[in-house]
Amino acid sequence: MIDLHTHSTASDGTLTPEALVDLAADQGLAAIALTDHDTVEGVPAALARGALCGLHVIPGVELSVHWDGSGQMHILGYYLRTDDTRLCERLGWLRDRRRERAQRIVEKLRGLGIQISFARVEGLAGGESIGRPHVARALLEAGAVGSLGEAFGRFLSPGRPGYESKEELGVEEGIGLVKASGGAAVLAHPATLKLNPAALAGCLKELKAFGLDGLEAVWSGHSAQQMAQFQALACNLDLLATGGSDFHGDNKPEIKLGTGRRNNVQVPDTLLDVLRQHCHKGAAAGA
Image (spheres, rainbow, N blue to C red):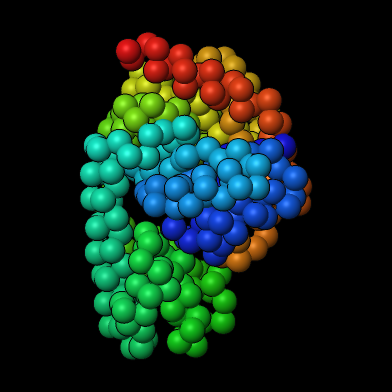
């Protein structure tokens, strides 16, 4: 089995890239993709660790992008060249926007009388890509909340007093960055878009015109019915159907590496060859 959706301390996961690879190897997974939010900083360490322990590591990313049809969506990139100049430039821009957003969130929370500092949030991020989970941990440390879930429920989710939106790439640019760096672009967790089947099909056709390669049919937050629906939709539109747990470690303890929630994620390693072949076809077409 493999897991094509994981996060490390390079973004909002709680395991280092090396520890994540070690866990995957210990659990007998054949491969993982490291898909941190808007950063590839953890990929070199994961690749090096994978080479040592015999685990295949796919260099990946999860890009936050804007689509006019529903606002934010996430695009997973697989087998991309993490040293691609344009990709690195745009990821740097996203990193700066994430930092600015976290500063605005802290200012809002301090305005509510909560004594946390941006320096502490930055420290919890460890110099990596800053996200709301780092603010949530600062709130927990400060005693303002009793759990990470409470931090999001009371302060950090959309509509709550500490929420701030972040600037994002357009979806066409995001897909283009993945493709230009030699990767395959996949729409993450389509159920989160809350589109009816016809609208989702229309969305996918639009994204496919931008170069989309697939959709994440199997995901921890999908029901069995949704997984079947998304796999059929991928087949009908000649898109890859991929899958992954969206593992974050202790930040989302209910999601287990390789198996998701209550063993609802099972991704066969035969998908690896299909994904590789798709990337090779894309590279040949763009040559």
